[in-house]
Image 1 (cartoon, rainbow, N blue to C red):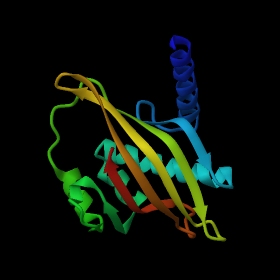
Image 2: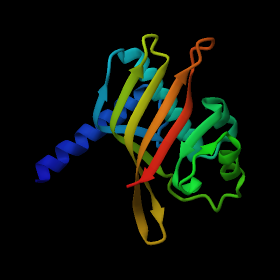
Image 3: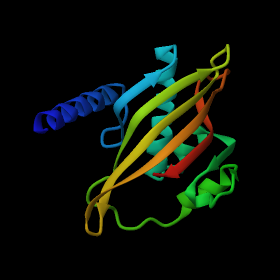
Image 4: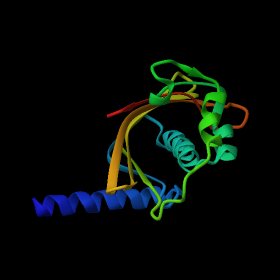
Length: 173
């Protein structure tokens, strides 16, 4: 059992190291566990990079970074929308504008597990990304891990070649 756990930790560290070598933020968002992709590895990597940027901007409260990564008419279902579809960026901006508490002594760490990227359509300008999101942070009584199941729909801007989030669904697990 100890050897299996050690092997899992080495595998997770290896995948996190590869994520960091792609330029994903240290202490930010890493990928662990099984990862499946459909066809074009290069384009799927760009989609996943865009998802990481969205999550990093949201996790660090950087509205100026978050806003251009999302479509102005973004839709979502998430716990904050209490069962309703939230439409547009104004819903999200409210949370970015809230005063933040004292900085945590240890930055939260986000890991995406069991990631699946699927490019859609003949022109491959849309994609669905599904994953389990684990956020490790310090709670009042020590470290805690929050898990959510998330799906993001991404669309490629054909003029700029950049991927934007047009819809997401987040459910606590």
